[in-house]
Image (cartoon, rainbow, N blue to C red; front, side, top):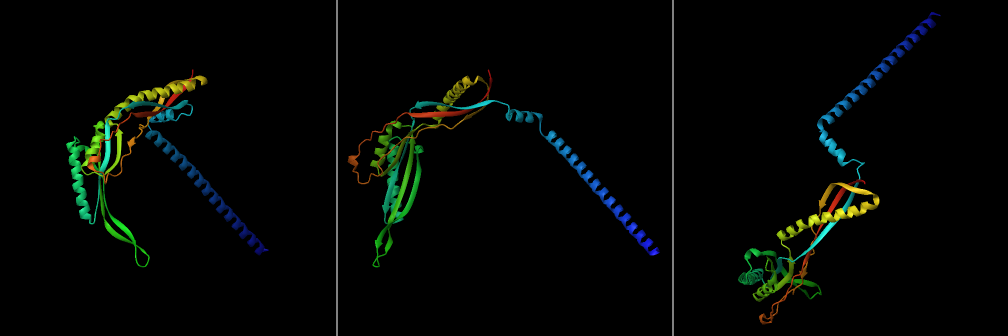
Length: 288
């Protein structure tokens, strides 16, 4: 009987201790959760306060104004075009020579090109209007079949090419410039083009901007009529790069074998060029 009582007492003590430990752990978990929630709320309040302090009210206002989903806009494009005579002549020509050695080919090429430059200078072209556009030197190979029937590459010489780019305002002298160059040793005329100088292009483009914006405004107004809307402001204007057609005149690729007496002044004429300015405009709109 005493043993049973002792066992019951021991078991009871164990249950009491286990219950006390469980209560202690539960209290600690509750305290931990409460502390975590408090820390999270404090951090959130601190971050919110930092953001409010860091972002000026003016910036917030501008952001809301820019990204206001309630605003009504219309996006349109406009263009304006003008024609003008080119005021710049660009000619690409040069000398190409071949010899058994690289030194001989380079020497012949240099002598011929110096004669070309001298002739162009005497015809009224300033050296400031000439610059090297391309220079190359490379070996020339012949393909022959050996005794075994295999093809072999045999070095046969070197080719040197020295190309000049000439840009001048003497747009009516294209034929004379080519004749002077070819007569003095040039055997390549790669390209001739008539262009607008940067100053003239900029001036024309500036004048076209207002016309392009007016074109965009008229388009927007016509589109808004059936919608009972009207333009109340401008959100943005973007001016795009000018579009200029590029004109070039194909010329004879090589003049080797032409007798000097057979050269005649080549009639080369320039035409008008069209310059186009494009804009993109976003208008604010509202009900009439």
